[in-house]
Structures are given as C-alpha cells and as structure tokens.
Length: 111
Image (cartoon, rainbow, N blue to C red; front, side, top):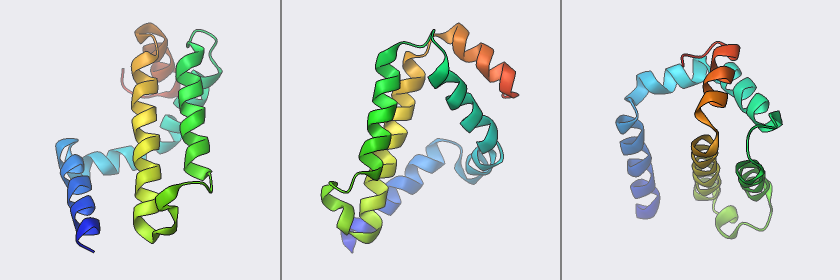
C-alpha cells in the first residue's frame, strides 16, 4: 500500500511539473488531434524506422500478458502506461523537427 501511495505521489508530482490539471485538460481536449498526429507520423516515410519500432514495441509490451507486475491491479497498469509514455517521448525526439511541425500544423495543433 505504501508503494502505491509513493507511485501516486510521483505521478501527481510529474503532472504538476507538466502544468497540473490544466495541462491534463488540454491533453484530453486535444486527444483526437494527438492520435491523428501519431498516426500520420508512424505512416510518414521521412520518420526513421527505429522510433517506429520503439513505439510498436512499447505498445506490444503494454498489451502483453507476460508483464511481471501485471497481476497487481493498479501498479500493473501504471508501469505499462509509464513505459508507453516514455516510448512516445523518445519517438517524438527522433522525429525530424520539420516533419513534426508540418504534421502538427496539418492536424491543427500549435507548432
């Protein structure tokens, strides 16, 4: 139980650093555009294959039944989410800046 509380506090601290509840509402509001952005980036041939493979690998890991803490109700889902979000962040770092800005503009997100 203590470990779960520590994990929740870390998650809240990360949320606060990223802008707090307002940032979460913005992410929820722009979720359709974000999904469309990632779909466009994954299918764009100008994006290198390594970040695409990283993203697919994280997605496979998230749905894989072989996760060790997957049997722990909340912690199992949090580690999958954390790994997938980390992979998304790495994916975005590997996407060339001009490709990213072009796709962000195309889906209606600020550049």
